[in-house]
Length: 159
Image 1: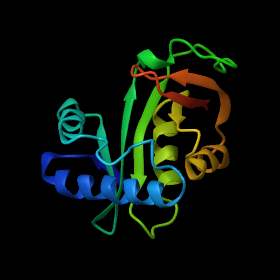
Image 2 (image 1 turned 180 degrees about the vertical axis):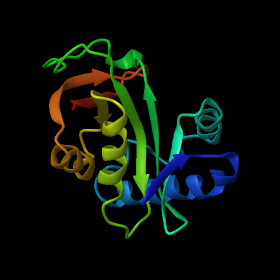
Image 3 (image 1 turned 90 degrees about the horizontal axis):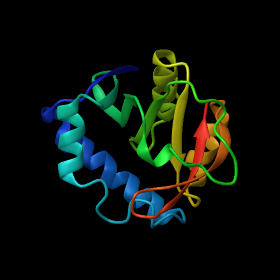
Image 4 (image 1 turned 60 degrees about the horizontal axis):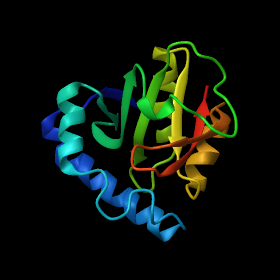
């Protein structure tokens, strides 16, 4: 597998991966995290234009996508019911998803991010058990709870 920055030409495939993910989440007890329309097309385009959208390819086929950036995430400034492992500079992973039926894509993408930044923070919905398992399998520590700008609660992890 290989990781590269996403381009506008990848947009249709990325949108399809997110649609598959929304369907999977709804079918597996997590219909609320991304609802029926998240992320909106405008956000996907902005992520690509800012250079923070990536795709994972296997044999030339896009099998995953995610957002990665080194910097500060405003929603991570306050953490409740716990604390971050440290306050060193960190990378942020958001909106990670993989093609249905593929194995190991999330772990590969997470590993790629960890190679580029010594400290990674990520959050997920309380109902997203598959992502919680993937994070724990990849050495992340559950640190507490954060709240998004819209007030939605998320479980916060750090490695």
